[in-house]
Length: 403
Image (cartoon, rainbow, N blue to C red; front, side):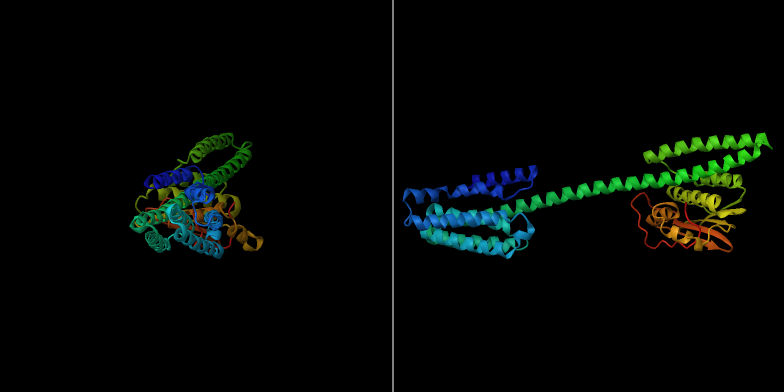
């Protein structure tokens, strides 16, 4: 008997590793009833016809219960519970009437019970079934029947434990696949967001400098050539940044972004004013604030019609702030700019707001004092904002839209 249950554990474990177990996994254990079947056909049973009907009834109930035990909805259905109770009654009747090999129906009943009854009710069900099997076996075959009690209890508990473990493994596999899917989606979001911000800024700068070069070609060839050199430099820098964005290793520099923004503003005829104070910032904080400067400066160039733009960076050791203020009229909220800003999703200022929120910061943007102001604030040691961000608590006022 010990070898039998050891083999049962190995077989069920193997089944759980290769495929999800089902009712067929427990069908071979009906071979334990071969001795009883031999008694019926060999005429050793006191009433072969009644024994045959009992054997048929037990097998039918066993198959019904086990096949319904691998789906939670059918396992917990009242019909399955009723069938298990009927199976218990048939088992007790056959064991009391015939004894001997008919007592092996109790371990089979334990298998069905372990499959149909799971934690937290399993302990009480297994103990009660073991006591019942022991009482019936002892009353029929004396103290030797205690082995049946142990076999019934162990078959109940082992079956339930293995099937519960199999369910847990399937759930873990599903969770792992979901995590992998989310990781892919987050990487796609990161790449699309970075690519949008990089190309939007770079193309805007190239267009502005190309227009300046076209205007200067008839008046100042040297200045036009300087603009063309800048276009070449911006293009090469964009290629480098795009490669870094593809590999995920891009780490922005706030100083570089401010210099690039100032150059783009001057080429568009906007006077840049840069003010910077406070202690040095952490690389992650600088990278995030650099995105803000890039985005805000691009919007000034494309939408504002401003003549002056101020970029102010400040910090006190705990929080860092960047404010980009222009004196342009831009697009009014009546033109739909406010709606576009609020619904821009993962692009433009909305994408930046999500990034900063994920790092514990805030972003506000809106018309103020006859111009447009973008303000970003972050902890001095910003968290990694490459994870999927949320948008709770990110105020974006109506005003000029993100590109």
